[in-house]
Picture (cartoon, one colour):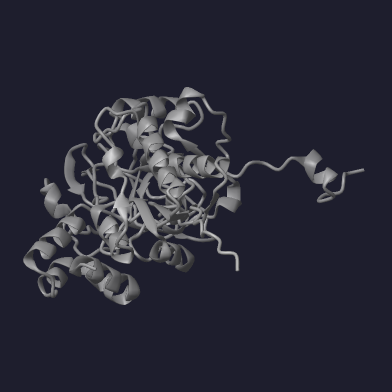
Length: 155
Length: 266
């Protein structure tokens, strides 16, 4: 068995280590026992994982609420900075806190989102309205979760 | 003492690797790979192939039958013929396919049918399919609203009738209308799919493009967008579309009564 296969199978047998790898792949690859060729291959495998942060929404203000009568809560994120024109390659590393959760996209009063389990829904290229009709900034990602047993439109 | 010549009759077992390297292979499937006299495989990646070879040194890839602009049907037929030829040669053959060996794998079924028709023992073992991963990663139960599953091109060219109040899963949306081996996503096919689905769903109905993680170092690909934006969405090389139901379908009072689940009003 070659070293790279063995390395990957070890991760299969150690879920915690696999999780740690996925969270910090660059450092884990660098510190591994693998040869330079294998390290390069492994880095390529990680890089080829399609990143979910791709443009979804063209423009518009947004409202938080799903289409099943639940409230949807915007979970705060790592940074409060709203980034304008961030290089797509850099977006993956950021989460943006959203303070104002009302708006419209694409329906006049609702952003129809269906959260699936607790998975993250990434909303790239939301263009915020500053209240006087000017596009202000881009949001790179939101994390949403369903609040059960609550019905209403306000987030 | 009568001395009989030993005749070794070939046999075939078809197994699946599951989607993720190593973690999805059943113990039974691994035993068949390890103990086979000849292993023929189609893997999802080179690393998966390396692993199969590490389990059995006789392992030989069938991927060379793929060729640009060669009809997929011809490729699959060549694969099945190669598998059956090894069985005819008197070997205990194990054919290994990516995912579940009986789900979206034509040569596995074809090889079993041909081998059986010629009097050889042939069977298939179940494996973990992309759909199994989808249920886990997207977190829904197909029993909740029912679940319909179609191959994308077949879904369109036969204008399949489906129930939008039930979950809809559409496979291979990256190759709609492409009968040959292609490497690029067919965006035109996606536009046609969106147009067809918009007869049953609104443009804002959320849909999810999905691909299971193939390696323990990867995350599954999950991209949710409005149906109207699907044709411009990022599409991985093996993409499945999850379309959630519109909403809960109303109960049928007459059927409830027939089943004794509700008493008729007097």
